[in-house]
Image (cartoon, rainbow, N blue to C red; front, side, top):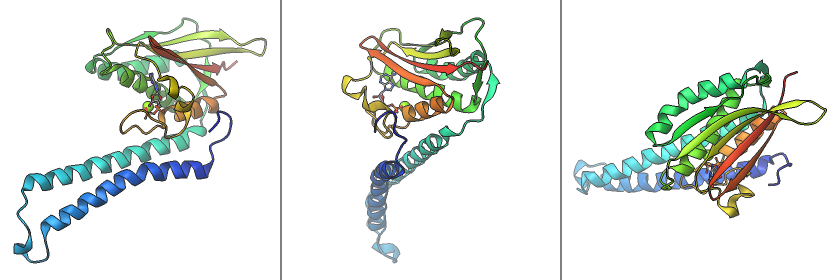
Amino acid sequence: MSDDTPHDIAVLAGGLAHEIRNPLSTIGLNLELLAESLGGTEPDEADDRPTARRKRMLRTVQRECGHLSEILDAFLAFARAGEPDLKEADLNRLVREFAEFFRPAAAAAGVRLTLLPAADLPPVRLDVRLMRQALLNLALNAQQALVGEGTPLPHIEVATRPILVGPAGGAVELSVADNGPGVPADALATMWDPFFSTKPGGSGLGLPTVRKIVEAHGGRVHCESGPSGTTFRIALPTAR
Ligand SMILES: Nc1ncnc2c1ncn2[C@@H]1O[C@H](COP(=O)(O)OP(=O)(O)O)[C@@H](O)[C@H]1O
Ligand SMILES: [Mg+2]
């Protein structure tokens, strides 16, 4: 899917169906095995396979149900990302509130989160809820890129700054940087496609949702990545 084509509904539906099929067949298989292990209608027809095995099958069903529900949540977030309710707002305030919320979880994962809010940042028009979602998606990706990668001093930096975009007007930039291993080279182009993921159990909807939210704000998002880290930069037009 190229950057500029609107997402084709049939392609999206196909992607969603594909994501749902695997957990669904795992659930079906485990329920079948469970039913078999419980035997027929007579109590003594049940075989005495150890309860531990049945519990394991039940846990698999529970896990896959959780996974299905995550896929649907991510898909709904993606679907709803295009209709922002824009109001003039302070991006620094959003960023500070986000940091307060995210920092404890990051710290628990061994990741330090720092903020670099620019002084005198011009106001922008924001759907605060949607932009918080975009920031969360980027911060989660950053954290996931850091955890388990053996990066010394894993670190995420969230920054804002005014930028110049020529005579047409100003813009502000919101960036999320990590010092992780970088985006795999063969994923740089495809990582924006719905359902593309290099993670086991990844929805692959985080970045497409970010892009949709940013573009609905009249902004742009791009990524710079190398072996010493990754930075996502969101540019948003100023309100006045
Ligand atoms: N900060 C990052 N560092 C390294 N790779 C990243 C980063 N952010 C995104 N990626 C890559 O982009 C892919 C798509 O991200 P995303 O759309 O959020 O889906 P998901 O997180 O479910 O895999 C990830 O699987 C990963 O390969
Ligand atoms: Mg993600």
